[in-house]
Image (cartoon, rainbow, N blue to C red; front, side, top):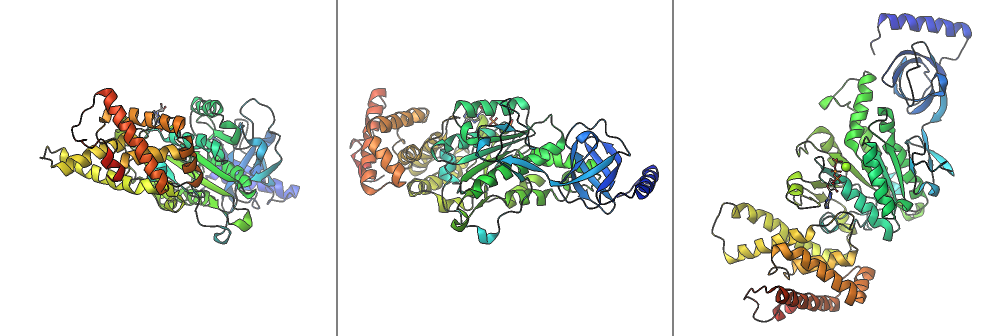
Length: 522
Ligand code: ATP
Ligand code: MG
C-alpha cells in the first residue's frame, strides 16, 4: 500500500505520541485517511477480519483490509466528523446480528436496527455475521423438494431443500416476483424465510414487505434490508447478516428459504468499498476476491444431516444481467457456485410469457432427486415436448411446408407454453400443478384454441376444487398419481373438454369417438 509523504509524517508523529503514552499499538490505531465511508487506519495490528472497531463518537466500523501496517476499515455510520489523526479502537467483537423466532415478521438493518417502526427487536440472542459453512460431514444429500408453487420452476427446474438456485435475468423480468412467490408458497409448507434486500430503492423494499404482509407471509419471514441510500458497507454486510439469521433457524432443525435480492448490487457495493480501500481492481473492475466472497456466502446453504437436527437453508441468489449477457463476470461466477439457475428472459417477458423462464438455459443440477413422484410423472414429457417445440418453431418460421406430425407438435408446444404461464402472487399447490400439466402433456388441450388454454385450465382447476376434492387431496398427500387416479383424471379432463368445446361451438372434426380414445392413450 503506497502512502503519501504527509501520511507518513502523520503516522510517525502519532506513533511517537503513542510510544510516549505507552499505548498498545495492537489495540488502537490512528486514522491516516478518511473519505466516503472508508478509513485507512495505521496500527490496530491485532484486529481480525470483520472485527468491529470504534471511531470517535461511538461510530462503529468493520476492519476488512488487513495489511502489514495499515488496516482498511469501513464506517457503519455518519463519518463526516471523523478526521485524520483520530483514534480508532478494537472492540474484540465481530459484526453480529440478533437472531431467533421473534424476528419473524420484522424488518431490520444488517446491523440489527429495526426498520419497521415496530419497536425493539427483543432478540433472544446474537450471532456473528461471518461463520464457517457446515462441513461436508455435517451435510446430507439434497432429497426433499422446496416447492415454489410456480409450475415452470417446480416442473422444469425443481429445487431441493438445501440447494442453491440462481435466479438471473435483465432488469424488470420478474426476478423478485419469482422469489417472493416462492416465499408466499411456504405458508403451507412450514419453511421459514429470510429476504435480504440489497441495494434496492426503499420504496421497492416497502412494496415487497407490504405484499408479504397482505399475503400473511410476513409472519414467517424476516426481512433484512440495506437500501440504495445506505452506505456501501451496510449493503456489503446484508447478505451475511441475513444468512446468520437463517443459520440460527437451521440449527434448530428448521427448513429455511433465503433470498438474496440482489447479489449484483452486493458486488457493486463491494467494488466501491474496495476502490476506496485502494485494492487492486480485477476483471470488470471487481476486486479479485468477490468470487471467493460469494462462494463462501453460498456455501452456507446446506441440508444438515439428521444428527445435526436435519435443518436446511435453501438459497435463491438473484443476479441482474445486462442485455441478457450471462457470460459477464459476476453471472458466470455465480453460475459456477450454485446448483442450477432459472434464467428469465426479457423477450419472453415482453411477449407475455410470464414467468419468463427460458427453459433451454435453465437447469437444476440436484433438484430432480427431490422432485415428487407426481411431478416427475408429468415433467419428463413436458420437457421433451417443449424442447421439440422450440426446435420446430425455428423451422416453422422459414415458412416450410409442415407435415401433420410437425403441426401436431407445434400445436402441443404452444399449449404447454400457455399452461406454464402463471399470475404473480398465485402459487399453485402441488395437485393443481400436476393436474394442469397432466392435461397438457396428454394432449387434452390440443384442440382447444391457444387463446383459450388459460380459460380451460381455470375451469379444470375449479372443477378439481369443487367436485373432486378427494382426488386433489390424494395427490397432495401421496405426492403421486396412482393408476386409478390417473384414469379418473383422464375422465374428468376428457369430459370437461367435450363440454368446453360444445359450449363454445369449437368443432375440430377430428374427434369422432367423443374423446373415448383419449381415455386409453394419447
Ligand atoms: P428489477 O430488475 O427492477 O429488480 P425484477 O426482475 O425483480 O425487476 P419484478 O419487479 O419482479 O422484476 O417484476 C417486474 C414487473 O413485472 C412487476 O411490475 C411485476 O408485477 C410484473 N410481473 C412479474 N412477474 C409477473 C407474472 N408472473 N405475471 C404478471 N406480471 C408479472
Ligand atoms: Mg427485483
